Amino acid sequence: MDWTITFAILDLVLVVALILRGAEVRLVLLAASLPLFLFTAGVVPMLDKVVAEMANSATVVPICSALGFAHVLKLTGCDQHLVRLLLCPLRRVRWLLVPGGIAAGYVINSTIVSQTGTAAVLGPILIPLLLANEMAPEVAGAVLLIGSSMGGELFNPGAVEMRKLAQLTGLSGHEAVLRSARLNLAACGTALVSFWLLNARRTIATVPIDGTVEPAPEPSSARADLRKAVVPLVPLLILFADPLLGRFSPIHAFRDPARILAAMFLGIGCAGLTCPGAIRKLGSAFFDGAGYAYTHVISLIVAASTFAEGIRLSGLIGLMIRGLVGSPRLTLVVATVAPWALAVASGTGIAPAVSIMEFFVPVCDSMGIDPVRLGTLASVGAHFGRTMSPAAAVVAMCGKLSGAPASRMIRLVAGPLALGGTVMVIAALMNGL
Image (cartoon, helix red, strand yellow):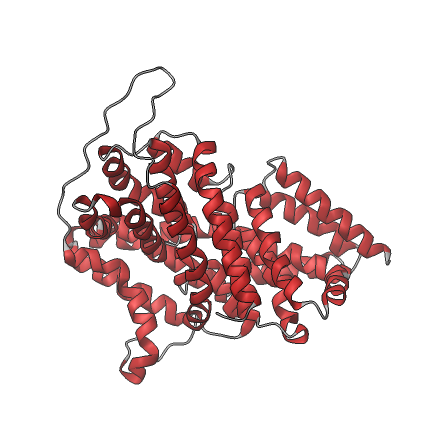
């Protein structure tokens, strides 16, 4: 075996070990990239790669504009009205609380491409509603967690994973979403139903450690303003209607990523119309959100993509591909399990999903594998792994809002997620979806 490949393996093992010990993911990935480039192409190509990813319009524009739109929704209150609209039927039908709460989180996450942001928006309304119906705090927290984190974001063309998959395959954002939708729904639908069945009887509030039972807060009864409630859906509706409307579409003249930016701007305009008093603050809210996205999301993509390129230059990926040639089924399993495990360890689904896609998607055709199928497995696997990670920000947020320990929520979601992932992989292996 070539010594550069041996070094790359040791480097990769060290990266995983450091991430498992809680080291900062971006720092670890960039630091580990440096020796890989030094021993292969040199430092200049590494810096070129960092610069290219930092200014990559295919990822920076859609992701930053999507998070900017999410901040505008928060400013105008439109996100809260969507939450109230989705939860309104659940107040009257108690047996729908669990599946309805999960589905509400899934829908909201498709408009707010941040799991922690989704939990922060939905939790203050959903958690009191669940607790008021005598649901145990850990179950209420788990409902919020699995709904906010397991995969709704993958229905947004501006989501990180969908943008990276679109970039690597030459598809548009909405095409990547549509082609990945069946596997996503199979995995997340299975997880929802199994969680519902397994926790249907867990409706008695648990006794806190001090031996007292705190009364559940009353859920908010504020009515939803339909005008505001539909605003979060405007960009998605525009993007998916664009192919149908053709030249009559308001974004028809644009190409990705400008098409996604235009759709977000139209959504921002609608949000401003529903809240005239906030119009003067729309610009600052949008760029605050864009800046947040660059700091917490784009930076991870830069680090993960640079490390993936370093591994590729070492020859390790070529060795892995040669070892997997003739075993497309094994490749699909690896593409699911690897990002899942890394996401559990790191608490983020972005870096694992992006890294695996950077590794395998470019060579899928030579291996006889549908690149969108592999990218979907990697993306959903990473989402599921993050949802059961004690290091994930969304887990901490759900624990804070529900008052339940993270370990209890993770135990409740782990089984359903594992079952959903298994169904997804089987469906992919059978070419059924």
